[in-house]
Amino acid sequence: MYVVVETWTPKPAFFAADEKARNDLFTGIQEAMKQLADIGFVTLGWGRAEPAAHSASYEWFAVWQAPSREVADVFLGGVERSGWYTYFEQSNVVGELRPADAVIAEHLALEAEVK
Image (tube, rainbow, N blue to C red):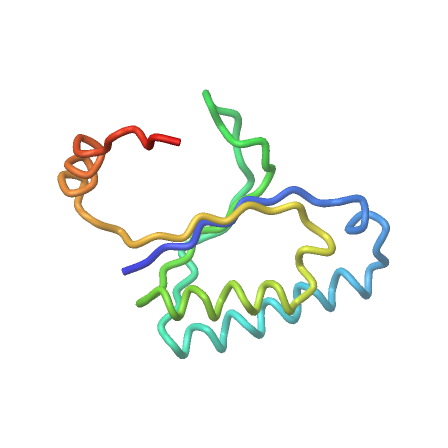
């Protein structure tokens, strides 16, 4: 299983957009979410980021579950086409969920890259 974590903050363009443009953007997103659910892409939730030690500077987040990297890529392509990045500064994290022991072992095997 893959997860996609989006973090974002509104750009000035979002605040400058009229009510219709904002509504159209989010209506399109809600429709896309329904279509994505048909291919196994699950919305785990959205939220407003709360202050925490070492937290990212973004104000909002969403967490999604995808059955494969390909489905995650379909989602990210849809985000791009929706015009979302016109209105929001965003950072994404995509990766396969694996047991902690496997990831810890990978960290312990890391070696510094020589440049």
